[in-house]
Length: 132
Image 1 (spheres, rainbow, N blue to C red):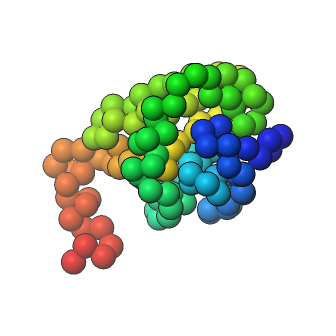
Image 2 (spheres, rainbow, N blue to C red):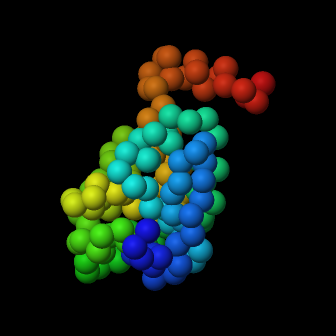
Image 3 (cartoon, rainbow, N blue to C red):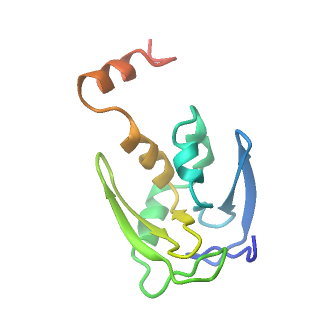
């Protein structure tokens, strides 16, 4: 990583590895930086929501930051997008390197948005390990 500074709170980013995939998590606000496609890969891996150790309330407050949010990888101005499904998630994407910034609590919601919906989704949640 070229810079070890959080694009939201200016805290230091530390590398964290899950299932052989390295992401960078802020020591301050606990937001997570995913290089291109890492969030997509990790959302399919059982238990990867364990990366998301931050307080969702703090993450929600950081959605209100105004001004430009700079990519921690290449320092390009990131684009703010919204994922609307089960949860409404505001997140930032770098148009140059395609990295994704998710505030604390958002990766867990991102994974929940990915779960199958409808009858099959409810069945899979009933029969998941530890639900009995």
